[in-house]
Image 1: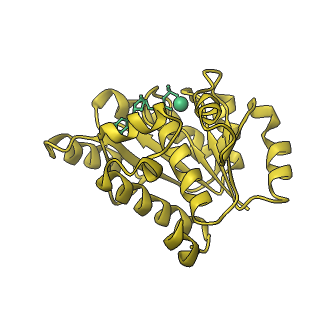
Image 2: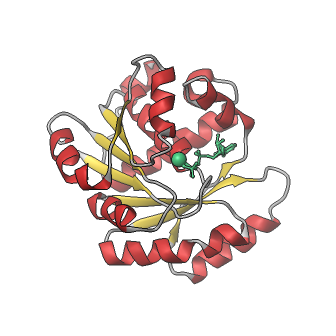
Length: 216
Ligand SMILES: Nc1ncnc2c1ncn2[C@@H]1O[C@H](COP(=O)(O)OP(=O)(O)OP(=O)(O)O)[C@@H](O)[C@H]1O
Ligand SMILES: [Mg+2]
């Protein structure tokens, strides 16, 4: 089993959206996946309630429970995604330590980019590999995103090579307890998530079961 922790200090950067989409992508590709929801807001868990039992399973937990959850998950799961709370605190550090890889979603604004610093400190403490990802990128202009790329590069952190753009389909899908993979409302959003999932698989060393994905 591989573990991906999705961590950032800033609220609204897209941790929950990406965690749920990646775990769902894994399930649709024939893997067993679950999401650990570390956020007391329990957004991921509430989404799973709207799905009425459809996978992936979402487990609410506090960070101290992570070692036990991970040990249990290792028995049957292929992928565990940890959706952390909007803080760079001890709980986020535990989430980083539990990870095989850390994904750090950020918006392209200066306030969000400034908030990367404490998270990068945690990453360093955890000694785990990490990649920043620009989420909510405008489909209208590339100026912000070019500045953001430079700012992230200057911090010496790897950057996911594509973007997740601002698309209403992401928001709408979560409201109905789904993902863009399931609603099919926006093919561009679907392709963005498929590409991100493929990147996660390659980064974590998960074999992509293309035959299952093709019929899902
Ligand atoms: N790429 C996107 N396009 C459009 N809406 C998005 C995108 N990413 C996230 N959102 C929306 O932005 C809001 C915040 O996203 P999300 O809840 O995933 O972030 P978070 O980092 O988990 O926030 P929180 O601090 O509340 O836990 C949600 O309403 C979500 O639907
Ligand atoms: Mg969240």
